[in-house]
Amino acid sequence: MHLRKVIAAVLIPFAAAVLVGLVVLWPGGAPAHERTGVGFDRQTQDATVTKVVEVSCKEAGASGVPPTGDTSTAEGSSAVQQEQGTCKRATIRVDSGDDKGRTFTEIVQPDQSRQLHEGQKVVVAYEPSAPKDLQYSVTDVNRRLPMALLAGIFAVAVVVVGRLRGVMALVALAISFMVLNFFILPAILQGSNPLVVAVVGASAIMLIALYLCHGLSARTSVAVLGTLISLLLIGILGSVFIDWAALTGNTDDNTGLIHGLYPTIDMSGLLLAGIIIGSLGVLDDVTVTQTSAVWELHEANPSMGWRGLYRAGIRIGRDHIASVVNTLVLAYAGAALPLLLLFSIAQSSVGTVANSELVAEEIVRTLVGSIGLVASVPVTTALAALVVSADRPGTEPALEASAVPARGGRGRRRKR
Image (cartoon, rainbow, N blue to C red; front, side, top):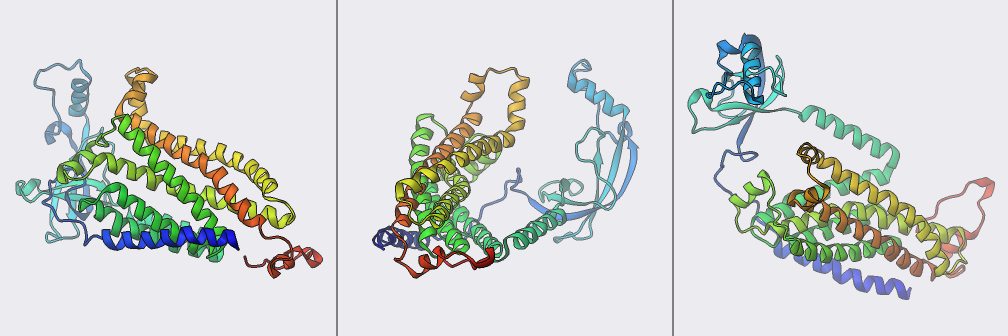
């Protein structure tokens, strides 16, 4: 009971501080800006491909030999092949917006990665300042139906396997998206410190998700405390090494566009905020698993002391560390695979690749997150062993009931 009071004395003020942070930093919505028409910052509408006919690329004027006349280069050779090939003239109907029902045509070259077909749902960009026949252009395929179906399959699988816990997990997931969309992103766009916003938002997500999914108990509180300590370590390490390695956080077109639209945003702080938020999901998994493992070990042998519980729990944690760290590295490598292929094509050395800011960001993100994960195992295991070992047999009715063998090999699972 004394240890539980200590945990409460830490977590209750922390939860209150998070609530105050949400109130103080809560934005009124993303600030408006004039659209640039670049990248994601474009007006888009839904549309449908109504007709596709094959035409000669030469007649359509879709390609031609470079002005220099040099066809020996890759660009020149590709232009010749396109000119001799067969293109497609697609007729697209706009299905939303003020110009609903309007049609326009677009030439699709044979070497384009995205080929259009009749009846296909697409997304078109609208540029009002362009000439009327060039105001609309196809930018992407409309994937809402397959994505919604996949999300539905995921939700059904979670509920069928997880039952009530699965339902609570989906509710927590929805709340996490709401915090991200209605607090974290607009607050950063309004000029609040990205690191402070990420800490407050991630803490709110952690408290809501863990207590909603696992209940208000000492076990969950230990997992929350272990996650909090690990996030603090990740924040400190991330801040130190981002500054030491001189990482700006402005490394691609998207971050460049963000910096251009909102120059007041601290891009290096945004990078650190991404590291904290990205690490939170895996941290939750590690801390909850370690806490549950120690609690189950105690139930199997209530007389085991905290040292024995720690040693047994840390053996489980070592296996968890090995798998989780490898998962993080492979996840980041998979996301950066096209970039790594470009370095491979250029025959760059490992040192050159690692020194580039694009890759260095991912290295710092991976290693800082992994250090926090590794540290969370002994910290959470020690906290759980200290708390649960204080519950000696006979001190609580629930523990007495757990020591009675189940009849017929089956027993009721008691609440903790």
